[in-house]
Length: 96
Image (tube, rainbow, N blue to C red; front, side, top):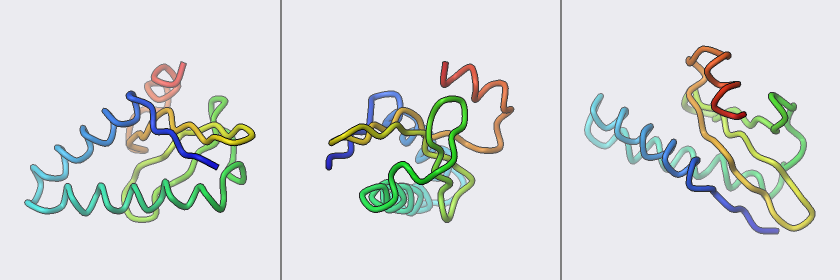
């Protein structure tokens, strides 16, 4: 099984990193470490999360972010990593 993080999700991670780094130096690194840990958990739990807007949604353990992914036979594709505090209509449009 392989996990592929699409460019759109990488940009989401970078945006989150910049946001948290502005809050406190080093917090951005902690954000990335936490989110990558959550993504790695997909090796064990891919496909078990509830569907939202046509994607499985994994909620981050430490930050208010959701990882939207799809699982196929041999690959897990991460499409977006979005702040759960955003308007649900914005999230729906972003995932369309």
